[in-house]
Length: 113
Picture 1 (spheres, rainbow, N blue to C red):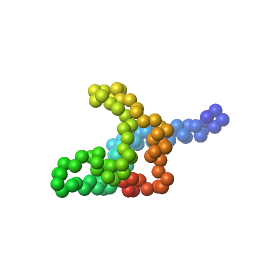
Picture 2 (picture 1 turned 60 degrees about the vertical axis):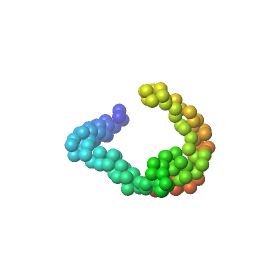
Picture 3 (picture 1 turned 135 degrees about the vertical axis):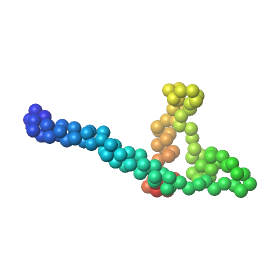
Picture 4 (picture 1 turned 60 degrees about the horizontal axis):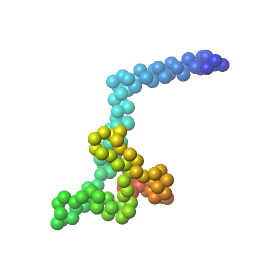
């Protein structure tokens, strides 16, 4: 900035203009569509209902995930009391997660989202 005050002022002015735009109704709306609505729309479009056993209308989520991902793929990552988020503790190390859940292919367990 000391060596090129004109460039520093230009960068600062551009930052000011960007913040004015992002805090305007139009700018916030565009940001909301791009960062919230569009990703949520893709999640909703990618949703595939879990097939249920015809004899059991209320299939549990844990067996459904195990059927999709395979036995042994589900592990707890945090343990919480349910009272306050601050009381949650991590029960799975980063090493464990990287060792057991790093995929060698680019495909997601649930398809492209």
